[in-house]
Structure formats: C-alpha cells, structure tokens
Length: 49
Image 1 (cartoon, one colour):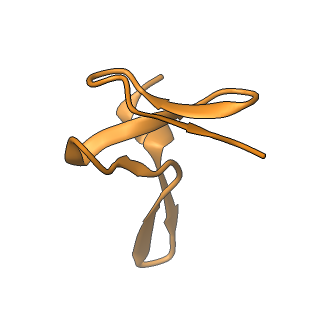
Image 2: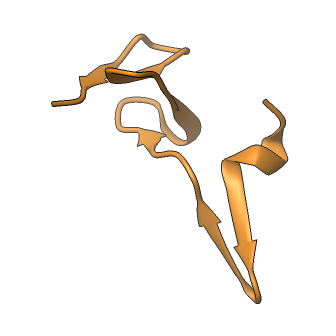
C-alpha cells in the first residue's frame, strides 16, 4: 500500500483513511483486517464487534 492510499483529498482538506496507533502515535497507521485493526510496529490490536 502506498502512502497516497492512507489519505483522501477532498477540495482543500486532507483526511486520514485509517486510524493512528494509540501506542506509537501519529504517523503509524493501524491496518484493517476482517475482524480487527492491528499495528504492524508494536502489535497493538483492536478487535471489531
């Protein structure tokens, strides 16, 4: 996945597509899986309901 895939540009605004990792901070995104969001750097995982 390229960096351009992590952001969406709408007019003059830029929004993040994925969430940042709460442990690693801004700049490290959580990857989206079928049943969870996970950080590839520290291993932090949020399970979806």
